[in-house]
Image (cartoon, rainbow, N blue to C red; front, side, top):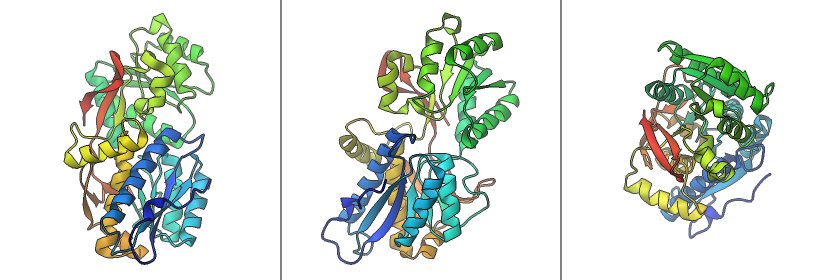
Length: 370
């Protein structure tokens, strides 16, 4: 699905627009709630940039393309957007999709600022064309593993689906926990019903089950089965990939969806800028903004700083990663080279482990800070 150009470019600005391509999952099987929050953040920031004079008097124009969690569709969108003359491509939530977009952007010489995907190997080889705001998976998931250990959970089961992303997460958890006396056993949800998974968890004696699966399917049925099994009353359910972040989780599961820790990339307390942006995002979304919405706003804000300071030519934008700085909603943003990561990386966005409060599932509790 190609959406019309964002009305963000409307206003008393002169000259041809500076076009940005935006990759966002807006239809299933993409994580549509994440896509909606990401787009809200991107669009709000574009409107603010244009309200402040645009890029040297030229308006920013957002060309949105729906990836629907499809890597081939994302790569094709990068091709199309490059042909439309975009100065850069931004966005994407799904790691495997962002990896495909990054590869195509690198091949075409188009700057890509990835908002939300965390896969360490976002690029197969080191590239000058790609930068990222979200923390690498290895950082966030190690912090999550430390929280599990601090909570006395060392015998970990993971419910998985076939995916490079889930496999990478399992490997990070296994290596990090093994060095600290923990264990990880993997259960393939394509081969087990939720009820059969419950039986396996009892046999294994797991103290925690991590949902390395999509949402709502099969995550929601698994939670229902585990919560309904008296044998597993003391089992902690966790979701490091953030499935409980969005309102749809609470709507589907109610109280059963509470008390499930997940990762969120926000600070303990937002500063004045974050508070102001968060309020405006909440008004747009009709609900509390997730960290993904803040990632969207920060993406456009730091890219606008690069465009203003270094020009709109693609090579100039890519060359600006090492020098650009901007005040984001979650702190000052600057990029650097990080060992083991082939893209320019913000090191680091803040990391929290949070859950929905069992006493009030609409409220989030901070359990651990990385």
